[in-house]
Image (cartoon, rainbow, N blue to C red; front, side, top):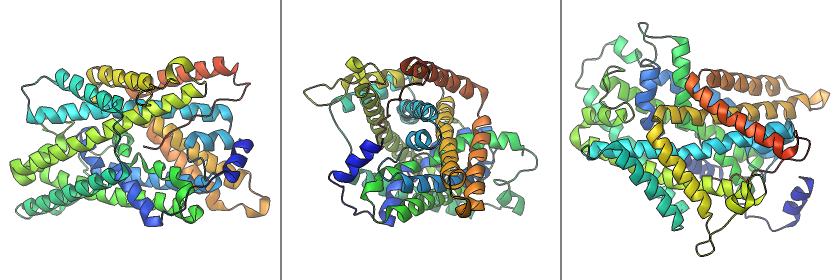
Length: 451
């Protein structure tokens, strides 16, 4: 690792041109302004209507984790990955486990996009069976990636701005709808706390899903080498991105809950927000929100499949997976064709076998492991290994609190998600032990690409 660091310091450098607000905008686009819309129905059902509360609890956990990410990015400005932080500060084997968890995240992202796109398409053409839509979208994502199509940063910015406009359209329609409704004080506070349905374990289970709203903020740390004053701006941008995302998400789900008036009765739980939009703004807004989220998830699905294929290629090239298959590049288009096909098959099979909720929970299973690891890595570096006179109480309390909250949310996941995630984790640990003869040899470095 020291040789690699020396090579980085002696070789050509990326131009440091990104400002603080460039990073914040990048982070918001990465997460997507409409992130809570896809989760609204599932979380509302699981938390018995306390979607706002789950978003706010999740924001607290993510803000603490964002602080740790920012501080670790300052310590490793050319790495920007959770498994690197954990592997260097805690133990290489724990870094491997973190990396293996991230592999599951990358594989599941296109899968849940396939499921959501198929559900959204059903809202337009319900006469076409759901399995047909799953096959269509899984195939579409795969074909686009096999052709080497890749969205540019400018396209992502346009999509981000377009989705922000959609959010404003919904909020405007919701306010107009609510002004015509007689709401009591109890109605206005019920999305935060309903004494008839509130249960802390139930709300925390909902929070464990709602945290998917924030997934992606850690991608900011991958730009460390291109940022002005990275030690300051990576930390601030990561925290500000989580804060702004949390505020926008809270406004969206609060308005949606007031419009619908209950946490039950959705025609389709996975696309519940679309039906709420129809109630607030009629068929036109229904179609706009449904189409916008469909396009957004199609873009995410294509990008996520490409990211997963690149991750598998990096692992194959470095020997973590069989190199002849996963490390192969198709010579004509220069893409990891085998890996694109593998991820496409996973999306297809998973889209037919899993629910959106289970896929999202399994994705969070891996994410929470990474978040716990980063918090503990920050605690180790800045408190445990700090010189006696330089230890500060906040360097102990904040990352420890972040790790504990993430652990509790991870523990609050439903048993189905923990079982499926545990099987994946166990398979990775067994493979790693065999590969390194009981983790006695150096582990392969996982080359995780940015989204």
